[in-house]
Image (cartoon, rainbow, N blue to C red; front, side, top):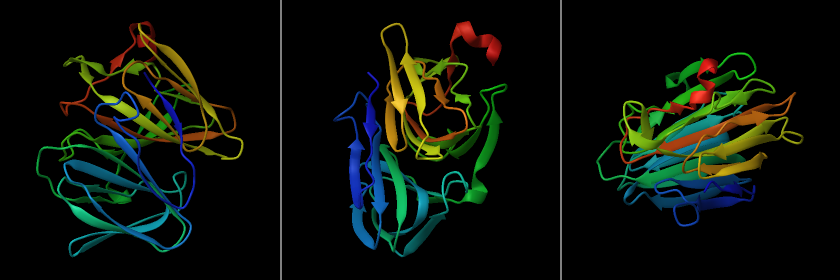
Length: 259
């Protein structure tokens, strides 16, 4: 069953706020960094691969002798800057002042290399039409050299819908559909008054969630359209994971005319 988590902005690093231990997700975990002043800590990916994405501010991640600087004015101002860290890697995260970042992780049984994903290397595409247009920023597409994580960002046009026409990806029946769980992390602009709605449904469930800034919603299965109120933009970071890497969504047959 899908779940909604409200993430608080408090100084520090909160590891695996969302994980298979407290949700119906099988692979994905979500971690959150919010720094108001200097902060430094060490981590080890162990048997998981990790993707770090800066939301705003500046952080440095050091792996051995290599240092990677991620800096961003904000999710509505700049394209994403990210760092992929493979399994079995020790690293240090350092923030000198205000910063906000998210990280997702998933089990990985293969050996890969760290990859710094600069804003210049991000593929951007426009999707939808009418009042369901949005911009999609592909951070880790399915051909990225990784084990499970596929990730990116979406920004709605003002007052628009997303994930429309409704689609799902919870059955292993390629080439029509792949089996991938997913999670979303949301931001609104303006933040103070912004909110949206999300419905997750199939033949076995039908739940609706309010969306507020810094919410995480898990999507273990089902169709999942998203909307935002007029006069506001909606951003969400999304991450997928499955047993197999090739990804294919399945559009609800009642909405094929909207593709």
